[in-house]
Length: 376
Image 1 (spheres, rainbow, N blue to C red):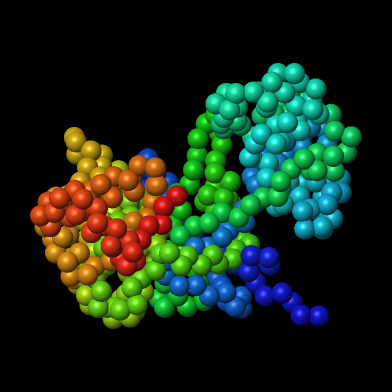
Image 2 (image 1 turned 180 degrees about the vertical axis):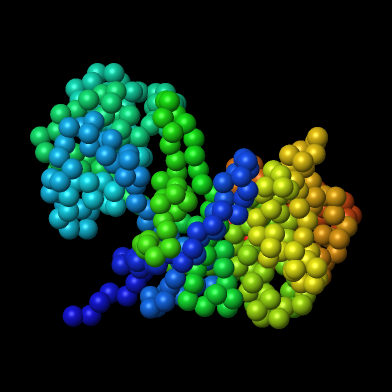
């Protein structure tokens, strides 16, 4: 019998090598750096790829949910993979107990006999969206009680827990047999209960060195370094958007690329939020990397990466004219749009181009893979 190779259908139990906070106490952002071993997995990745992590749910949430439903934690249930385990284990490692969507709401309305829930599930989309925001299955079980005949009757309603994708923050050339991530821990309060991102808090709070997490590699063909190391690269990654660029600069330095690496980074405060300062400082001092940083809350007027791009527009344009590849990683809804607008402004102003010509220049960069985005 041959064992299926590790991958999406057979995730690798990657040993955790270390977890450390890379933002300081008092920071408005909680950012962690986590390292996994890939030894013996056969998994390979390149700079720009992502790591899929399959999280486990918070045991406290699992216990509270089982208690609220009045079910037996030791009752046997079947996982989506067909294994027989206890209800407690299934809800911890196999099922999504935080995401509530219309399909689940419809099933819950029928099981609870709630006319109110039925009206929400079948009614106005905006009202449905408002109702679902920040609600998990414990909220449903508390507000609209259901008496399930068996643990299986409950788990039969649930979806399997899904992997979360994170941009890889390491180069295999610099860290053979390892893969690193840079992750922002998501925490918030909704309906008087503290909550957190399922996977980010799993890594930040519960994973310890020696424990394992189920992972696989997700190849990202649309976010890759230029094959020619003589091509300069410009990287724009505020916050955890810095993640793939750590893999980029490590890769470029390992390859001996001397054509120029320029990182635009941004975060709220210099004192607490200088991610990878210990690694970046020697690189900037040696000239291996040009670094432009926007500390948005250290000045009276908020300064972001796009403002620095415009301020340093003449040099940015010179790099583009030398054939530089331009990369953006981070928030798609606002930051990436603002960065693209700033890039158009630089091309227009310093390239002496009309709006139409600047748009054509950017379109050409995209076509020739000189403008790539990893946004979410």
